[in-house]
Image 1: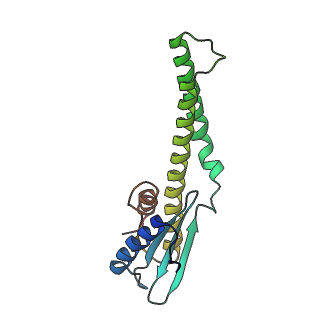
Image 2 (image 1 turned 180 degrees about the horizontal axis):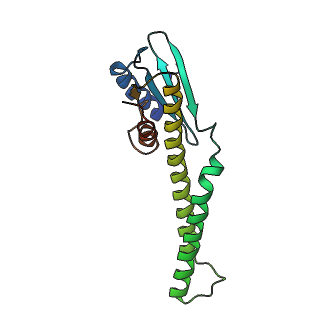
Image 3 (image 1 turned 180 degrees about the vertical axis):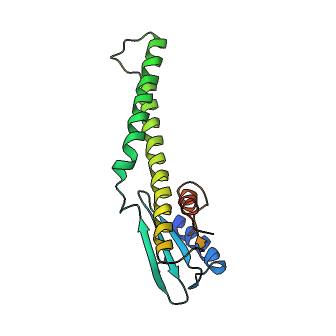
Length: 168
């Protein structure tokens, strides 16, 4: 017998989302902001649950991620290289040779830049969602975090929407 979910993580998120959905529903006056987070992107929709209609949809797929992340990525790379050079001088090694520590430091810096980029994109998705919602006449919404923790990208999306004028 095959179960509905192959992955326990997905099943647990589905259960959390179900609990959230028991409390949060969208109406024509106050639609629900539904959030979905994948590894690479984040998606948000305004939904009227009484009619079962998606009113507005925004995702990070529509954004030009390279343009928003380029300055931050270049800065982080420069900082990582400067730190690696300082470590090499402190250890008494030549500048051309890399140690294993500096390789790990560069990898950590790259990872941090990627995480920061995703959070910046999530905040921008929140702003775009708020602008689209306000253009359709919605000021107040109910936030559905989709079974995800209110942390990181989900929180950044909510903050971006609040900054742009949506009321939760």
